[in-house]
Image (cartoon, rainbow, N blue to C red; front, top):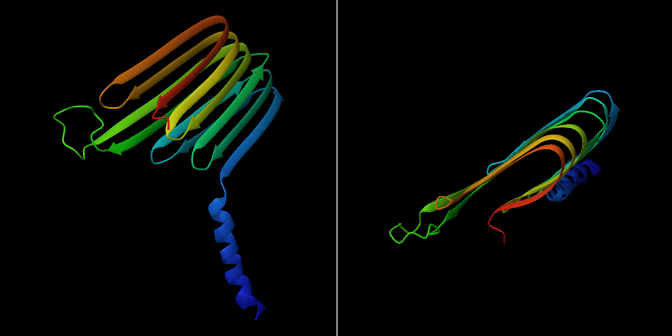
Length: 184
């Protein structure tokens, strides 16, 4: 008799608690040697990929949280070489006449695509990065160290295109914040 209630009760609890949970991966690494960390998240309208490597005394903390949006926080500090490669993309389709063109047909679909790429090779220093992929693509990062750091950003809604790039070399203290897409 108890088995009759046990199995349906377990399924109901699994559905209730399983529907409200979000995926999260967190890692913290302190190493005096070689470290290689990479991750990627692919969704129907968004993507994120990153790779980090170090070869000397390093502290690396990373958190990926996936629920209604994707939130990524990365912090790394190294006394030696540190390689950084992060890519985030967000695509959204909107129906209706959002192009602003007088001769377009109603009901056309416009697609907004935004992407942000950061790459760097530091000979030592600190790197902190935050990404939030939801209705808009938000990227914030701080670099304090020496080396080479490159940033590229593109946003295209079919009517206008915005491109951004920055290249920094030498001893640096860089802070950048980018918001691409529709912010509600």
